[in-house]
Length: 95
Figure 1 (cartoon, rainbow, N blue to C red):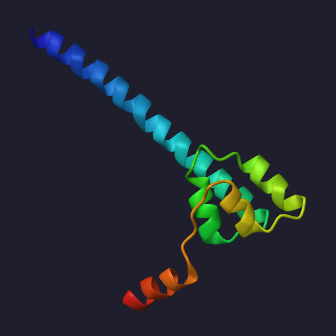
Figure 2: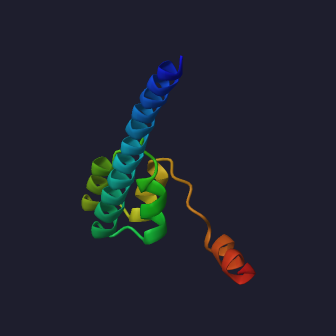
């Protein structure tokens, strides 16, 4: 029975390792998306919000801006709710 406990622990360890690998990959992808958006001219706050939303196709979003769509408008078209300037000012004042 002790050996079965070790086998379960080994199986659980493998599962945990796979989950950790998945998280690292997601962080890598998120970083790549963020930097791609920054290079395309999006602000840091726009890029951060969009990069973490895997449902948004950043190639499509960047293409919109290359065709002349303002970055903020492109974000709104994609369904991204950006914080209002007043909200940011209040948040910074609270810090």
